[in-house]
Structure formats: C-alpha cells, structure tokens
Image 1 (cartoon, rainbow, N blue to C red):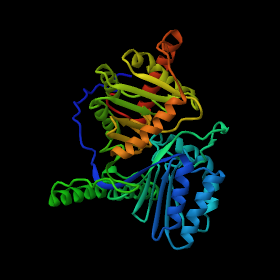
Image 2 (cartoon, helix red, strand yellow; image 1 turned 180 degrees about the horizontal axis):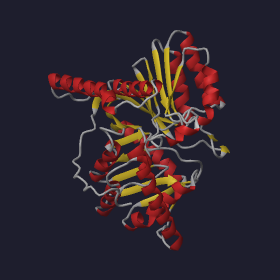
Image 3 (cartoon, rainbow, N blue to C red; image 1 turned 60 degrees about the vertical axis):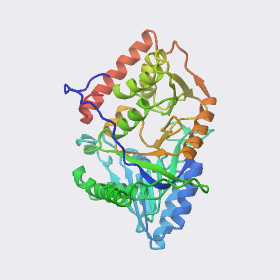
Image 4 (cartoon, one colour; image 1 turned 45 degrees about the horizontal axis):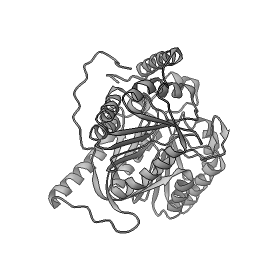
Length: 420
C-alpha cells in the first residue's frame, strides 16, 4: 500500500532511540522459560508488581500465574494488572472471579463487554504490550501473552509450543518500563483516554535525568563482559498514538539501512510500509544477506495473504523468505550484523506500526545478539524456504488486491494518517 492521505512524507532522519548502558538483558524463549522466571520474581516481591498484557487467558498455566499474584497480594505486595479488553475478553469473567475479594487491582484497557463499546471511537487501537515490573528492579518485556505455549485460542491444544521470545531486564532501563506500565494501568483504571502527552511527561523527565547524569559524568565506557548476565547497552522503544507514532518503524528501518552483512527478521504478521520495504530491498541489493522468517502454520488466513502479497517483489530483489512450519509462530525479533537486535510485541504490519500500543527492547551487545542469532538459525533450519515463483499468478494478484483494500479501509477507520 503506497499512500494513506495526501500529505507529503517528511524526510526521516535516523534518531537515537535512547540507549542506556549498564543493563543486564537475558533472552527467554517461550512461556516455558518466561513464566517460571516471572513467578519466581513475584514470589520474592517486596513492594509492588505491575503487569500489562494483551491476553491473560484462563488456562492452567495462566491461572497459576494469577495465583502467584494473589499470594503476593496476601503478603502485602501492591499488585496491579492491566489487560486488553479485546484480547482478554473471553477470559475476563474468570479473571475477575479469581481476583475477587483480593487486593489485586485488575484494569481493562478499552473494554469490549458491552455492545456499544464496539461503536466507540478508537476501539481498534488496542493494548498489545507485554510488560511486567517487580519492585522497580526487574522487568520482563517481549511478545509472550499470558497463555500456555501449547494452547491456541482459535485452534486448541497443539503438539509443539509456539515460537516466541521475551527478555529479562535489570538496570536503568527498568525505570522506563515501569513508568510505561504504570501509565497504561492508570489510563485503563480511571476509565477514560487521557491525553498521551500528559502520560508522557514522567518518562520524558526520566530520560532528561539520565541525559543530565551522563553529561555530568562524561563519556562512559561499558564494562568488560563478566559473569552470566552482561552489562549491556539497550533501549526501551514504545509506540503510542501521539508523540511516538512511528518510533518502532523507524528503529527497524534505520537499523536495516545501516546493515553491512546480515539482516534476520522473525515476524508472524508481516506487511511493512514503504519505508521498511525499501530498506529491505536496498540492503539485499547492496549484498547484505536478508532473511525473513514468517508463518508457515497460519492462525489467520488474511495475515498469510498479506505476507504472501509481498513475496514476489522481495524475492526478486534478493530477499530470502522462509516459513516456520513446526508450530505457530508468534515471535517478533530481529538482528542486524550481530550488533543490533530487538525483541518485543510489535509485528511489522499496519496494526502494530500505526495503531496499537507496542513495546520493544533494542539491544546492542555481542553476547546477547549471538544467543538470539543461534535461536534464529535453529528456527530457520526447521523451516521451508519459499521458492522464487511464489507470489505470482492470478491468485496472488487477487490476494494483493484484497490485502491492499482491507489495509486501506482498516487504517482509515482506525484513524491512522500519513503514508505507509
């Protein structure tokens, strides 16, 4: 899709997303690794737990986490949970019953439990972030919803777990994650949409404080690697609907434009705008090895059509495309040159890049990136490569027409402006 609206696109200048040194960042694969870490952290919480998620299901794995939150509340820990009203709509009754009579404060972002809620403006803009902060010291950020890895809401129990990732964080970056989840919980709890500028003043003040501290201390060299979790340079990148409308899109495009040897992207819902498509084509054209790992086992047919609509053009420009077939794919990760990596909630499609509230962590660290690169290689080895004739023919042309029309209408209804 080439154009939305008639405004001329402004030239984008690459911006520093706000890297902070001295963090500990560990990659976690799937809920099998994430949930035990979260439960352990919550079990040890002393003062507060904040949790934001798109889906908080009512399966056994999810309710075990809910019980861990309840146990923390009984110890006197302040527990605040916010879920999306659409993503968690089917399990809200069970969650409310589970938390009833406790001090766990469950907030719902844009509830969908009344028919008139569907008619309210902005209901397509959903909370898609997956964040957890414990005692302001430990944070979890990624793409993993609170649901068993082997359970799909629409397809039932699966033999293998879905492919997904999150990160565990310690360090200054945790403050920014905490401010974000507190803001979104407050917004949902008070039941109305505040001006995003009001919610942003605290994170902005925090960033200013970090900048003043770094200016006072002068240039700081990151410590040499030592120990299991290394002090790394990382950034917490948000997408909202006011000041940070395209921050995640720009982070991807800037990194790909600067690539020298490799670009690997794993994403289930892939329909990038012109900025990222151009970056991928130009990178492949100058000799960079560009690989995309997308869904082979589809959960939504239209999402598969959207990705397939781009196959022929990208392959023609030298981009390698693979489809992950062992299980459902839900990971949203990328690595560039072994120097830049991202893990988060944002897909590379109009919904994530222009509409939803999203959160990614961007990491610059050789050790972390090597671990993620190994995971990507393992996943690609288990996938099938898309042939050079994919995405051609009359059927593919029809798919492209349907996808372009649907995306255009959706973004108009959602209130997205500008070009994509």
